[in-house]
Amino acid sequence: MRFLLLMAEADHFNKWEAADDAHRERVYADFHAFDEAVKTRGSIVGGDALDRPATARTVRPGDDRPVTDGPYAETVEQIGGFYLLDVPDLEAAVELAALLPREYTVEVRPTLEVAM
Image 1 (cartoon, rainbow, N blue to C red):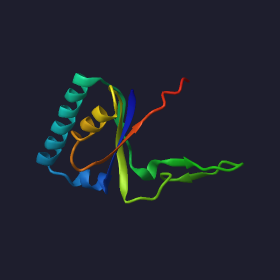
Image 2: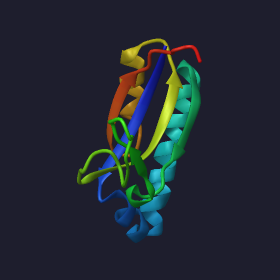
Image 3: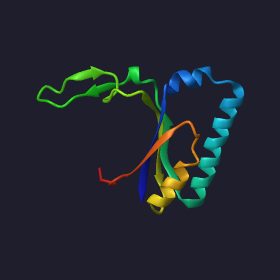
């Protein structure tokens, strides 16, 4: 089964820019531990860090499909990145999500694996 993990943190981008070397090393170590744990249970299908929300454009509903600057939702928490995992079940996905850096709120959502 595939699961999308969305990682969000309040004021994520400014906090990362202000982080000292020790903090960054710990976060990188957490990501490495997560990556290794996923390998024992499944695989990472994809993932990446995201740019600041101000760089986003949102295509809105409607006949003329207006485009607005910024993310689709106004929120204090900013999505900083994502992983797409292929693991046996939701329980495994949630256990693995808990290994990501503790600063993040992580939403774990099954995908429907729609054929394209």
